[in-house]
Length: 200
Image 1 (cartoon, rainbow, N blue to C red):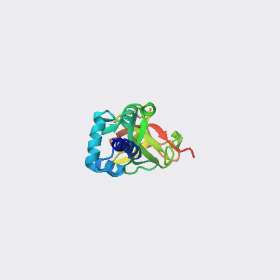
Image 2 (image 1 turned 120 degrees about the vertical axis):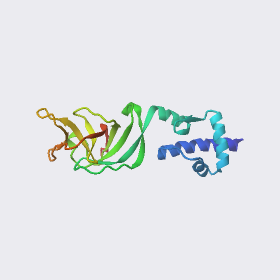
Image 3 (image 1 turned 180 degrees about the vertical axis):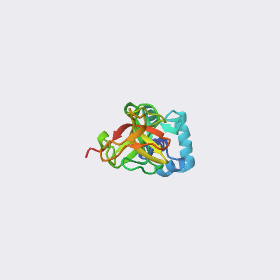
Image 4 (image 1 turned 90 degrees about the horizontal axis):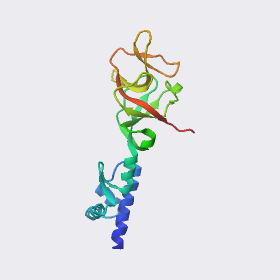
């Protein structure tokens, strides 16, 4: 009996540590390899842990009580390539990492992270290499910093509208760069809400 309890504790601990490291749940085979057991034994132990309420069903699979609480108090955010803060560059759409951020910090909604590249937004406190938290939405108010797609190229700029001509344009926060007036339709991919940066 003590061996079974020890294995069950190992399963719970492994799921927690794997989720912390990777941002997603391990497969049954991965758990079995991680705790030094076989797949069928892990399946039986996992079923018992679910019956006892130690493991819980969630929208991402079977989770520990700790992960269940993390899910309710946090949001999973994917790092989606990089975005230019200088000349327009093609969007990179590969999620390279996941981060768990508390909802008390970011609020409700769907988010993603982009890594800033270039120096055109330094006046807004966004330096090259910073992680910019973007709230996914297709609309924005003038004055907000947006991820904009123009002619299949993406950039991070402030959305503005000319008072004299009513033209909509993208404004860099660096006097070395020119405003980008739009010759084609502008597609808003999201609005910047926070910047995560190293202070050293």
